[in-house]
Amino acid sequence: MTTIEDANFALQKVLDAGSKKNVIELAWIKNVRVTIPRVIVTLSLPSFANSQRDRIVQEVRGVLLDFEDIDDVQIEVDNNPSKTESQNQSNAPELQKIDGIRHIIAVSSGKGGVGKSTIAVNLACSLAKLGLKTGLLDADIYGPNTPSMMGVAEQNPKVTEGSGSDQRLIPINKYGISLVSMGFLIEEGQPVIWRGPMLNSIIRQFLYQVEWNNLDFLVIDLPPGTGDAQISLTQSVPISGAIVVTTPQQVSLQDARRGLAMFKQLGVPLLGIVENMSVFIPPDMPGKKYEIFGKGGGQTLAKENDLPLLAQIPIEIPLVDDSNKGVPISISQPNKESSLVFGNLAQLIKNQFVNTY
Ligand SMILES: Nc1ncnc2c1ncn2[C@@H]1O[C@H](COP(=O)(O)OP(=O)(O)OP(=O)(O)O)[C@@H](O)[C@H]1O
Image (cartoon, rainbow, N blue to C red; front, side, top):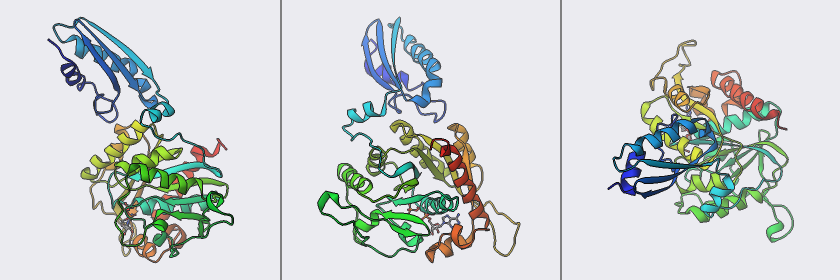
């Protein structure tokens, strides 16, 4: 006799067209009841999967009718579960607009070391160069290195006058960018042991008690990966769009896919993919490009998720050197290829949001 376990197992054959993950894994099946000869399934689809609704319903019905003792499948579709609904289910706080910020752009990566902070920093600088008021929040609690890339040594930024909850943290201004780092809260060399709820309250306090000065964009450098910290962060702030950074290798795609699935599941809008370290440009051979890490990774990821490949950033030695000196390449060498690519990326993001001002 068919059981709920059998039904759930069979439903794993139904896949999301983009991520190729199955509907059980993606938690798109909210409920399954089996009362032979009938099965009742509740589907809970995020808004980005609406276009697949009819196909998914048909396939769910198909795989369940394959059982000999089932001849009636009822499917209830809970369309576009709102963010507030899913947050209530997980007891997450409701998203609240942050005073003084128009748009929040999250820069994320499935794993560390792919250049996420480099991209967050240079994107922020390039947005500022377009005349947009820009802030940068380094939320990478595991390696808050944005201040050093921006040449900011202060560990203790100033606070506004007043007392207790009236007081607000004043961002550090560098290269025209308002910078705040979680690193300001962590003593150097100390391990980070914050868990979801603790992190959640810290990040909220951090964001809502900062004197953000009418920013057009706040770029957030998220921690790498898809653990508690990332989920807390993405549920704490109203993100306008997320960028997923990958390198061209196949191995980093798997991690990036996990990142994409997390954003989709949390209902965070995705802006697209940025491929870093696409080609190496040797400084002594202008015009030469070497595909050190293979090619096509960013394009593959973009295609399978129906997202744009927003930028392909080359490996350039000054990108490391200048960043080590505390000056992002977009500021120090605006005519280098990577600076031009960062400029285009900023323009794309501006174009996407400028009409909503
Ligand atoms: N396109 C590039 N060309 C040359 N060097 C790069 C490029 N992108 C990143 N790097 C270098 O690679 C190193 C890692 O970059 P970065 O710190 O931005 O990665 P990350 O993904 O933020 O890492 P983490 O997960 O540790 O925060 C840095 O030394 C940086 O200067």
